[in-house]
Image 1 (cartoon, rainbow, N blue to C red):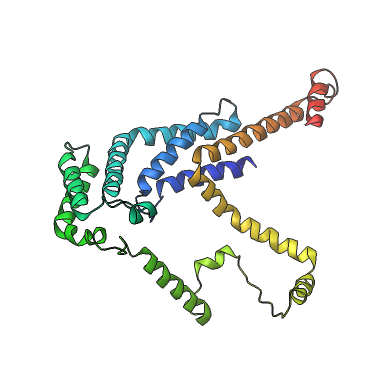
Image 2: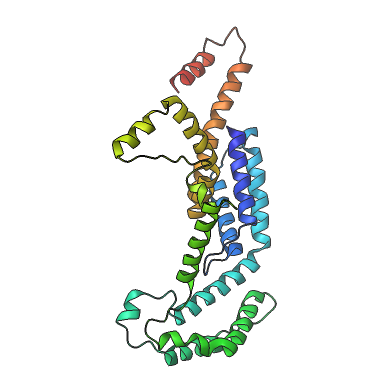
Length: 290
């Protein structure tokens, strides 16, 4: 069990180092650094100095060293990400339903003025602010080239600011075509497991009768296999949502199992003649209670 928890911690660190994201306004490098910070906070809960926790203590030291080495770059990247969120706020993106329907003050002229003001106020300098400098340069160049084309959506009613809904429709049609043609598997099949069963029934009772033909033991075997396959995905999902709580839970179980292991080792080393007398009897009684 301890080896399994150590493996989970290593996977969480590797995921933070190589984390990527395709979500709008979400940067994988910054999220990975924040994930490592949360992991260090979780690893700080280890207070024991026994041999069982020595591995995680050394691992915490190395993670702290990486955080200290990249702190300046992370602060620069965090400030650049804040500037990116300010750009989204100037563009009123993503658009809210109330703004599109009831707010008549939004116009292309106001948006252009807000963007030019933001570009003028953003003046990073120095070698330690490379991310901010690159973001400012790209923003200024792209705004001069394509700024006017981006402003039509504020003057033409019903014109969306992006084509995400259209791309989503094309994606669903493409996945459906792949599914019915059998030329390539899709990722959506992972949500349903490694196999799908097709039932042909005219009524719900007939469908229920077909499902009940599957033995309960066989169902449990395949259900447990599916649960085991889903464990890594569920772990990373919890890790990305709340890394501190996830690591804290692992450390809690690690401490509990390490203490139990130390107690078992103490009983094994204890002499047979005095194992059931004095302290040995007390240890054995506590283990039986647990």
